Image (cartoon, rainbow, N blue to C red):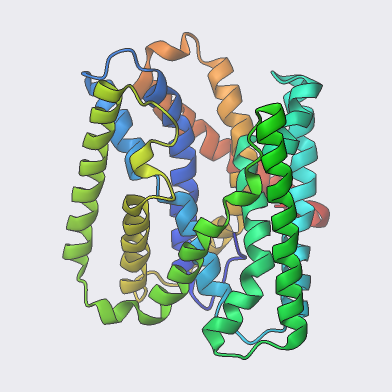
Length: 343
């Protein structure tokens, strides 16, 4: 997630919407996966809410592409800025959730194994490790966008990075063969390069597509409805209940098209999404809200009695409580300069 910007305020609106979508995903996923009967209004509404929220992470990456690509920058300067932005929150929140896991439901051995295999101490932190990997290659993508010929030093660095990932892949093959364990955290980011470039492309050239608000909105409704129907068929007939649903994987065409349409809708209406102090303030808290919200999802599940029996009211309560408490937590923390660096 990049820093909020007053130069493109419509991206701040998108950032807020995507953050709310992440919370909605996590508030609905439990009921989507564990519902005993799919032929109920409760499950269908949960399915639709979950399906309609799956654009969230692709939008975050697209926003980064719109803000970071196409600007003149040396490889060194790019790495310096991104390291300052990414490393402190990655280290702080990894340590925080390591402790949180030990206090709740994860033993020390499982925590260490999860870090080794998946690159995070809590599942939502996969985004930070994915983004860190993506940022390693972002300067070279930017050179391509800007039409700059890479220097020999840049090519050597690129080859060295690729050698590092080749080495990680070798370790992964050994782990899969000898330990029957999937070491995969570093294999995710290449898929998000497409979203990274897509954000830049739609920001600069989206108007050339000549899609009206009505066409975009209609396409979104039809695609989400079709995806939700597909979820039902996969669950009912093939018993596939994974999270995310296969049709709404970020690596699938449906999520790619839906995220592109939502981004394009915001870009098309940028003139109406004007800079506003409140919007800037809320956008400034979204990164922190993303990072802290699983704590309040967890606490909501513990606080609400008989959690499995009341899907819709509990989804509403979990979503509302998590959003408000996460915002209040981050708004207070950001009053301190040290915490501003990690949120």
